[in-house]
Length: 413
Image (cartoon, rainbow, N blue to C red; front, side, top):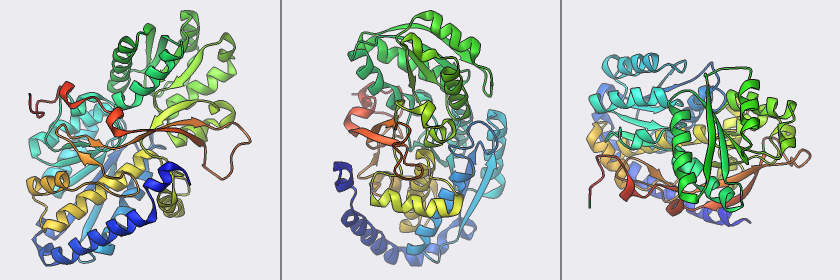
């Protein structure tokens, strides 16, 4: 058994289940105090565009599985799931969430899966005093300068994703980087975070070029990266964008020049779409992988039964955020935001997504990460088992120190 297996074993799961069951029994009489007689969860994300594979309807399935597990503990508490496609447009996402809050009585929103949309939703969360659990949202602004008391980052931010790989590669002599990035909040923020990490590690930036969301021809961007002579070409994009860019990288024989491609954000569905012939050797940082241990595999089996493909890290984080919200609300018998938020913060997260994780003052759920590498063709032992886990990145190393946070909610020493 791997070290990460032993930390997440069935004995811990049984203890957590017992603790939740005991709290459920004590809280059942209070279920009737929920407003509208139900807990309402809204899942907003990209359900038809370039980010739909990594989140999309799979995040809705993950939320439904959370409700199933919640009802094992609280069968008498009604839960409603709403979902909508924000089409990667901040104004559409904001309109959906405002209607949910003002008309439909939604108590908690999860996912977002787009940094620009998330920043728009964050303003509403602050204004309406509603809880949002962000999944695939990279911008550090969400828990930095634009943090909100109710805006919780459950999965990652761009600092988590780039700091470790930059240190490792610069330390190995690959210190000159060129960036091909998505031209919206996520891509610009990831390049900025990478620049800061490069400077701290003694590396340099050869240049950066930003492409529109949904572009299909990356030739000009790749040729500019090649002409830069950089040691590393870092892709600060995601989903379908990364898949297309990496396929064209291989088609054009870009690796022959000795440059190393780095996927600063890569999801399991990206590897599935591009194939191991293209993805082999690519490393990335992830907060979760379905084949880590027995608990993650059990969740993945349930998810695949409903969705037909393995869960991504964002989808797993939606499950965790929704379940933690629901059990916190039911345990205190109310959906009043401040009370539920206090319960969520006071209660460690222990589930198949994260262990002994806690929400710190800037709204980040603090947990371990994993450096993973895409397997070589022929190395696949079972469907969707695309990664080798290179190492665990402890939570203590994965996050920007709280003392350096720009979030105004963090107490100043």
